Length: 457
Image 1: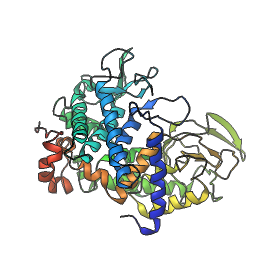
Image 2 (image 1 turned 90 degrees about the vertical axis):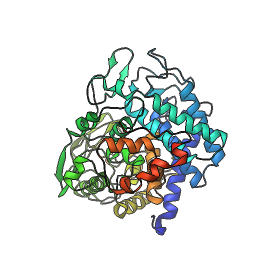
Image 3 (image 1 turned 60 degrees about the vertical axis):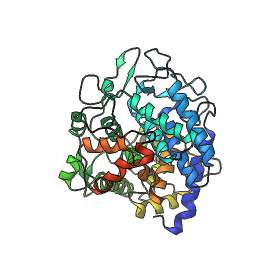
Image 4 (image 1 turned 180 degrees about the vertical axis):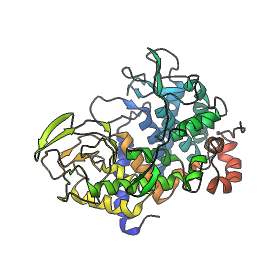
């Protein structure tokens, strides 16, 4: 539960970030812009985050339920009716969708890939919306039916391309990309939804293959499953309440993925305190416990500058990580805020501190600046400030703050029969998965009216 002292701050953060999904949308098809940079296409992951954010908007009084249903239905109808096929200008293929879509036509933008992870986020948002809009009225029934059919159409087996793990994507010009989802990354939700499919499920071996290349480390006396960018420790947690449930890997380690993300969050703070590369901080203190949040973000580069006698290389948009880098001093305030459920004792003071420093600016339409770099020369103590906001930043901020405050998305997805089936096939047990099994399997709005309870493979 949120501490009353911070309620107004969290209200403001959610309200401002939610505005992205109100304004950066094509009302004709529900597509959401990847970023506020002029001319940018839609990101299907941003669309998925919007679909999950609309229920939060309803609960927080930011959007009428009827308006949220209308937006959701427009979006789902578009994806169901959009062209699927191997053509280079389609919207999707085999139930998956292209990473970026033209905001107006809804067709593939540029030469981007058919993205397995971004489609997963889109589908997760659709499933969360279907579980929320549970009333026995025509439009809400249609939301549930469309979400179900979109999910069941996705051919997860095809995306394996003959191997155990899942490929990153596919292009009509050259086929499957050479990269696969291996090791610990944001694809946990991909494997779990893929395993839970009643129509084209992943094989059980896929999850074992995924976890087989995990990297367990001891950093600053914290033992945890390592990933450098903070978003990796957050994205699957947007949808899944990992508290108390464990797969084989985590049972052997004696913790769960929630505790793992808590430790990763503390490692980020400790890295900021140590500041081994001696980056400047906006507050003037080189070792600040409230200036952290290293993740995939926009940056001031690419360029190299000599600053205080040190040659500094700066990057543009990049998956930054701690403590092993890459790190050029860029901090993303949303990333620290999205770790709120894991470690409120350090996240709440961090958000408050950064707001006091000016990361919440009137010139930024959606509250927190996307990222800043106090080492890179700029006109304010923040140094360089990204002029853009991204849907992939705003969504986790809205949703993870809500999971901390009310557990809304977690409680919805705990009733998702597909996710439950995926968790069980992946070997998860314990906690709410045991105690809620009967309720989840018999929930009328999820099982008998739109979302089908899959048979156990």
